[in-house]
Length: 92
Image 1 (cartoon, rainbow, N blue to C red):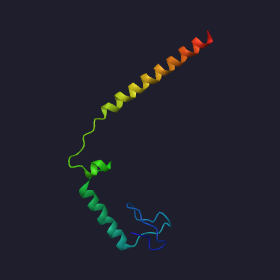
Image 2: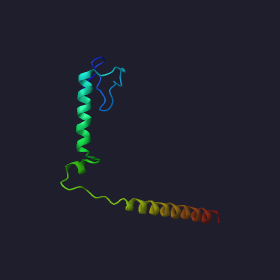
Image 3: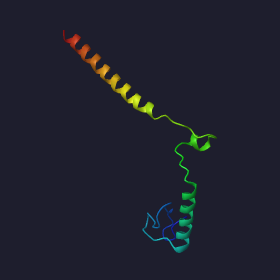
Image 4: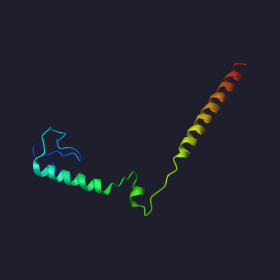
């Protein structure tokens, strides 16, 4: 839908044009409410295109992300230690 005052695209939520601040007319508000009701009925949350087009829902294991954070911290500490050792050896 487009604003009848300025022609800008209307937001999918709310009843006011973000461009000019004009209020939607009754017909547009009814259409907006119907759209929001249909959206509430489906309640499908899609984050990735692969989720949208896959036949089975993808189960993700978010525990691995925490393990990767610890691994990253360990790698950073090792790199810093190596740099300190190299700096000490160059001074001698």
